[in-house]
Image (cartoon, rainbow, N blue to C red):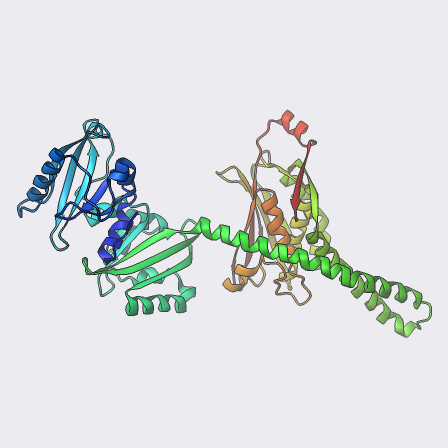
Length: 485
């Protein structure tokens, strides 16, 4: 698609490229100014920017007459019949004249579709008509910031009725991102200075889902208004975050191999010598020797975590029941929870439909880490609620809800990053391992939190539906998967 330098053309180009029918903008000399994707497919090399539309003599005469008819003041929308002898297609051409720019907008509609009353986009092909046909959200605001018009895509993306936004200040939209006031201020500052600004913001939809929305705004001279294009960038952002996480794990693997080589040998020597001097130490010194033993064991534990990330493993996947694993882990962790005055409750819905394909040992590590973290953040005790249900998308959703100190937005954005930790003696590998394990099981992990009110980790596993007999047969079948941890 070719773009012109004029801002009106830039806006028009973005809006009409998704129209199903061929659309072209031509000058009085029949030269093509701009055309959409459908026109390029329909007419091929016969339509090119800054070149006349290739027509036979009779077609050219009809087009000149049609253009002259469009320029008449009393004519707002014109139409005429057009036969394309190359494609052997009959078209109904509808057109309007833009006097301020001296160009003509032509839309080619297949006559057969018109007769069959098949769904077509509305005409006239005005800015408003294209707004309603656009797959992106479009917001038009006056120079003073008052919202003039928007399409229904905006209502869908924001989860706010158009009636509540129309006529309001565009500052109302920006209040949807209260935690990013400085970034929003910078956006408006750029818009004021350069008449053009872009930003992408994390948005919590009223339905509870997290979206990443991109705002692209520029001033349109012909409309004498600001036009904002609103797009959902959630899938792209998720891919970028996944890629960042994979890169960090790759770097971590290289570091782990080096650390293992450099530390393993001296650590083994230290451990051996401390055992040799146990008999030579008096009673007063034995507590210190116990501390040395304890710290060496802790160093070995951290080193082992690094080593897991430095080499590939063969995954042996089986069909397992999530509820069964959860019950086993809660039973295992309950003594530690009791010692820290933490109560664990488990509520399970659709227990008969929670079979997944996974590696039981790795899943158990994730669940143990979830409960262990929850106990640690509830320093004065509290309640850990574990809940399980089947989602409408056929996923097992497992939630670990604590009553701890909660997390800020900055911490939540980094919480699954390798080596990132807020604990004094943490390695920053627990949640990173959980994130990677969930990806390997074709699942996902999300976190929501509020400072002072606790955190909730949501784990999603794809579920496999079995009958009772089939379940018993498949729970014992292994499936080996080769993957990098």
